[in-house]
Amino acid sequence: MTNALGQLLIFIAIGVAWRYVKPMGINAGTMQRNLFSLIYGVLLPIVAFFAFWKFKMDARALKMLIIIAVASAGVMAAAWFYLKQSKLPDRMQGALFVAASFGAVAFLGYPMSGIFRKVISWTGGRVGIEFFIVANIILLLTVGVFLLRQYGGMGRSKNPVEALIKEPIFIAAVVGIVVGLMNIKVPTLLNLVYNKTLTSLFPLMLITLGLSLNWHPGWNKLIVRGLIPVAAIKLLLLPLLVYAMIMMLGPIGKLTSTSLVLFAMMPSTLYGLVLCDRYKLETNAYAAAITFTTVIAVIMMPIVHGMKLF
Image (cartoon, rainbow, N blue to C red; front, top):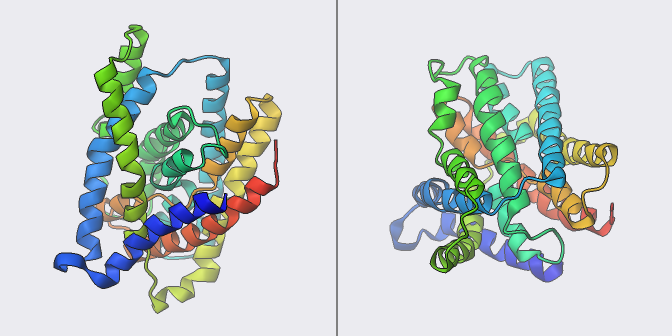
């Protein structure tokens, strides 16, 4: 576990250091946007396509999808209710709603699934991809976007259904499911492409996450009213709901169950920065939430794993 966490921290540290060193004069913001576009627009769709091509829908898989959907919906409801009572500005409420409800299951969880092969279930990253598709694509871009419109930002005319069908990861997943239903075997060459994509994703995702980590003294006033509640909902409530759903629906395997709980503990998703920009929400508050939840999540992960819940 120590070596695995060390690998994670080294790549994240490279991203953090870039903010101060600025190799070749390229600042952290520019590098982050470029890497994010590459990962989100090209590499993750490739992974989603192959993951769902190889995906077999059985009773355990269906149970896992239900767990993800119900737990994520519960957290969205809790975040919405708390923020409505918080009396924070609407634009800040919208940003913190995304931060509390949706995790970096791709940008931290997915690399973690490759590095911690003995810790969580490694099935081509299937658990992480399913979590990402259900929570961060389907729920976020439908119910989530509908709720974001209520916070008074710009971009209200954006149709959530149109936004969903234009998402490259969602399209890749649907195409992968269709190809998988045809029972076509993955050719050796394409399987090599898939494996090389996975290999390149891990460091790029973690460096991108590191590039997003920064802290401004002005954010300190957000800690009590915003960041601590967001961290509690994202890093405590969601894993507890996932755990409760697993206990309620019955076992799905020790490693898969542990995977789901750890993926539920991921910090706020980087994609939230895109949504904050699109809907004119409080981007600075969201950036603070990413930093705050990432630091806590990295500390909590080995503790929760050591508890041996299953």
